[in-house]
Length: 176
Image (cartoon, rainbow, N blue to C red; front, side, top):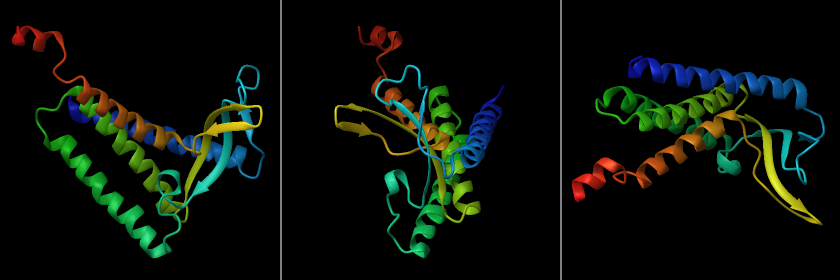
């Protein structure tokens, strides 16, 4: 399958998964108490399903801005960034397969959250939370969704590719 096909499959698959899980979260979690999962083995409430909406970006960044400014940044500016990432994916001829997958993941996550902002009154549905703790203390992540996982996963792949760039056996032979 050519690059265009792979990008479409990755982006479409992740966007659909993100939107389906958000619909399930709305129906199953909204207005309900936190659900630890799985209850049988999760030490000290490791993973939770917990409904929340976020008017801001990552960890509620920009959520205190006036609504018009927030919409401009989180819908307008993000849309421009997503278009640039999409154009780069299709215009760049020699693109490492890992970079292609990573950018497709970032694009999918951005689209998934943008759909929420446009069709859910500027709010993104979040429903997962991880953390550790016990004995009166806890350390928990922010509440996130599948789109957030795609964005973070894509960025981690990009960082790992950059970190290990030029460290493969082919590069070692050339330097000997």
